[in-house]
View (tube, rainbow, N blue to C red):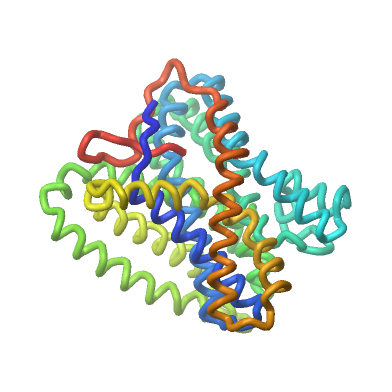
Length: 371
């Protein structure tokens, strides 16, 4: 199994993490605006698509193998990577909020606080909604593919694509039919049953990229220019869709948001895919990308706590000084947490023994990304 990192994906992951963390500090300051909130909203959506893209090779390998045992290994790998750091952060924030072992804490711990709606009385760990969507995707989507391919009696890429499209369509129908668009943000955008399809778009993108990767590589500069133009257009349109979706209902933009958000995430990955060789060439650049990618998860988990700490200590200081201290604390705290908590867990994860997992991106030496 490939374990090398892809600088482009690490950089995108890190930038997305800070594109959530910094706007959240501005909102707490309070010096934020609707623009800052939209940036944080869309950065999470990029995370969703990136997750599907990076995990697609593992999911495809497990489905093609057809044995539930490898799906079990996939789940154990994901749970070790995501749940243990999450529970650590959840306990800390629950102690601070005086919610440890409360009913809300238990729902957070089981990832069910937003399964069909907002079930907690107090949403004191507000970033957890997206992590619940991730965890339920890890279970539902591969299982959907495994059962679907068994029923279709075909596990080729085309069959998996057909099933992924059906998965997205099913969630879209449920969201349209049963979603409470009068309270779009809380009862649709942050609800597992209505948003679990958002990660499947990354799976589809991976299949598309792999199909055209060799052809596109012949024209790297042309591909980069097209990718920049595509991302700029999609970002502009999606930014305005997000703004319109927050307006009082009925807002058609709320229906369009999931598609615009998926398009933005896909366009961001296409852009960084076009830059992958350039970022990988310079060792110091690649090392920085790897570093920011490694700490991205803990930045996301802990940034609200760091924000409250810095705000209480430096609340009277200029905003620029607060932001500098905040980013520094996020980087330092996340670095320590990665080295002493996350890295040992990653090293202990089980490996696939009977299947071959393809690299996420083709690079100069055939390197892949670790998920």
